[in-house]
Length: 143
Image (cartoon, helix red, strand yellow):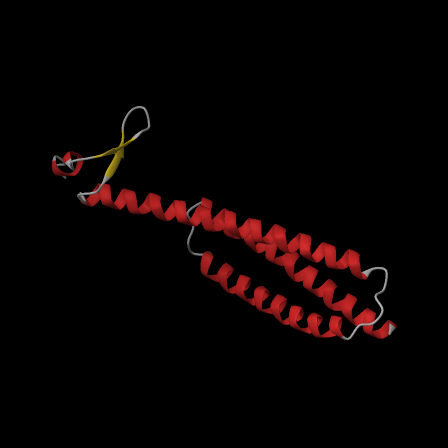
């Protein structure tokens, strides 16, 4: 049974390492989004998918191992807690990244609408409030 528990501990440790690496990738992703550098995002997305796949595979293996485990070692609950904690941390980081990417997309879309004079373009007044314009900005532009 000790070998069974050590195998579970080993897989949990591998899963924790993958989650830690994923958190680092999520930090890099947020930096790329915030600095509006799109060139590295594709590679980061591939790395993220690779780690997610490894984590899912390990999770399936752990599920099988845990159902056949009669006796838990003392370190298993702590490892499981750490994995869950790191997973929640990664989920929060991913949510922040998704929100940042969405905001960046909205900003680019609004700028494009202003520049092409879309009928629904929006600008801001001196107080920072949104104003739906009548496209005078683009129509009166002489370039």
